[in-house]
Amino acid sequence: MRRLVLTAFLAAPLALAALSGAAQAQQGQAPQPLRTAVDGTFAPHAFPKLDGGVQGFNVDLFTEVARRMGRPITMDSASFSGLVPALNAGRYDFLAAPVTVTPERAENLLFTEGYLYTEFQFGIRKGTAPIKSLEDIRGKAIAVNKGSAYDAWAQKNAAQLGFTVQTFDSQPDAVQAVVAGRVFATLGGNTTIRYAATRAPMLVPDFTIKETRAHWAAPFRKDNAELRNAVENVLECMKLDGTVARLSEKWFGTKPAADDAENTPFPGYGVPGLPGHDPTPHTPRCG
Image (cartoon, rainbow, N blue to C red; front, side, top):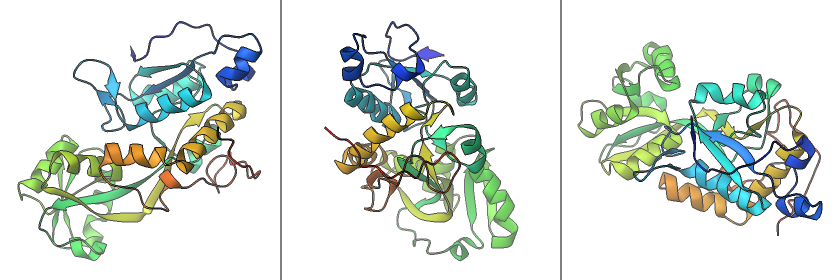
């Protein structure tokens, strides 16, 4: 595990952890860091910089959240599989890594509202006719990253939809197969496909499978609603002033639509319709 921002601190009581830096100062307390972590191998959300440390959309997003709260932030880089256990053990206040909100996860964690939508998306070679429906991949070869959720979807649906699946050891390898003309398209997450297109000009982000859409959000422990609400308030302000959308365009290469999660403050706190959502109306406090 690697600490990305080094800040010495003592563990803060839970109530103090939810306060802004200014509020802590009024109580005679030095601002306590927000403790968080990312998977530092998940480009373009968090990935290594050539000169050390990490960069990416989620790094920028939550560094700005902490700045607006007047708080330092410590951000570890660790394997994704260990992040939720470490959160529940009290090592982190929340996770900056993108986490898909599912009903099962929402039963055990508190989430902010989504700051991005995650959905399955095809990438095709430049000059190829766009995919208008899943019927258009019938008879075609689709490249996927072996063992991924996209691989699982492709294997499950290949016979019914009439396409063949080619698996690769990494998503970049799957992208290269499209660019080289060895397969018709690659299937991946929308943000990784969009990012890949900024690095491989012959790749074009194309059809999305809307029924796979879910929120990517920040998880907290179930007993930490106060901090969840405080962070969500800042995220909503960043949506309203266009910051989340600008970061999205910077890292993923396309401008979010007006109804995308980057531009949409959702009602209440959390993801509407899922466990942990607090429907109490509120107006974001931005300043």
